[in-house]
Amino acid sequence: MINHPANLTQAYADLAHLRGMAPAILEETVAANFSRLTAHILP
Image 1 (cartoon, rainbow, N blue to C red):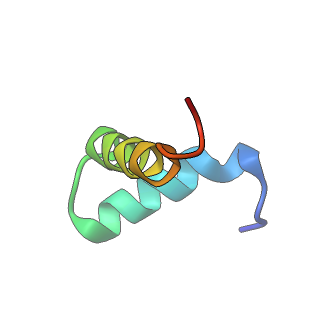
Image 2 (image 1 turned 60 degrees about the vertical axis):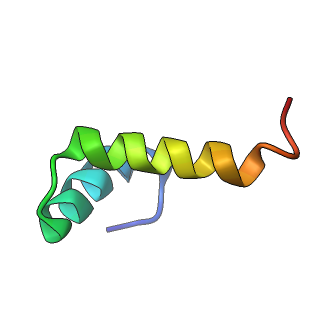
Image 3 (image 1 turned 120 degrees about the vertical axis):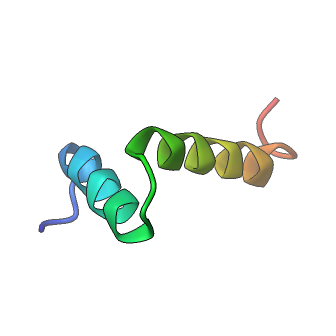
């Protein structure tokens, strides 16, 4: 798989499968982590 933004959907699906979780839950987790990481930078 080539590292390209168009491949994020498949990458999330594959990672969710490996972790035994639904892709939607993985997406929520990643979004929450990103928000915590950038909370002090982004208003």
